[in-house]
Image (tube, rainbow, N blue to C red; front, side, top):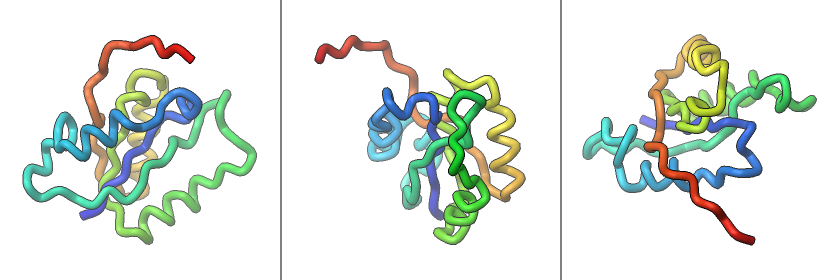
Length: 117
C-alpha cells in the first residue's frame, strides 16, 4: 500500500508540511489507522487550486496519472484543506472519481504561533 498527502495550494508560502510529516512519522492522528502496517508515503502534493491559485500550467490529469503509476491507492486530504477550502467535498469527489481511497485529515490543528524573522 502506498499513500499520498494532498495539501492546500493557498498555503504553499506558509505551510512547510511538517505537521503532516510529523503525524505520519509518529503514526498519530489520521495515520493511526494503519497500526503496525505503515504504508509507504509516496507523495506530498497540492490540490488542483481554486480561482485565486490555479496556475496556467496546471495539469491535474498528469498529476493523477503519476500517482497511479507510482501505486498510490490512498490519499489523505490534509488539515489545511479542511480549514482553508470551500471545495473540500469537490476535492474528495475528484479523488474518488480517479479511484483513490480518501482519508480525511493528517494531523490535529495546533495553536498558531508567531514567527519572528
